[in-house]
Image 1: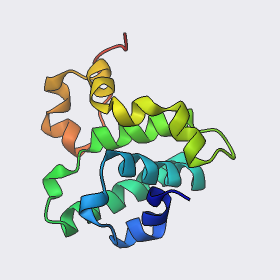
Image 2: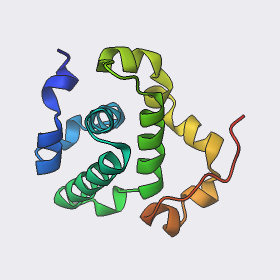
Image 3: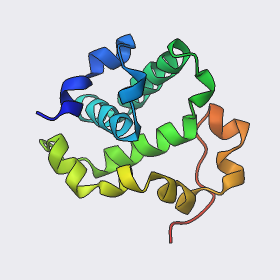
Length: 131
């Protein structure tokens, strides 16, 4: 079991028992993947979003929450997840979700759209077609 898998769980995330220093982008993707593999998509997104909003408030950084980015990655993770696949296999097949997250967002969203208050507060569809 990796240190990531030992450090994060759905329960710890929902209770806000997360060390901010360890909750990097890969940890975000991992926890989102946990939700997607345990719940149907609507429940996964709802619970992850609620937990992330709660966590950012608890850490004193509520403005770090971004609805469109959260939903975008949740939808991609759900689309790319395979039944009965473990985290290591998922991560190996989807390195772009972790190492190229900014590039992926730029392929689908203009800076103007993604930086809008609307995109920050609710999911908005992409305004670019992927290349």
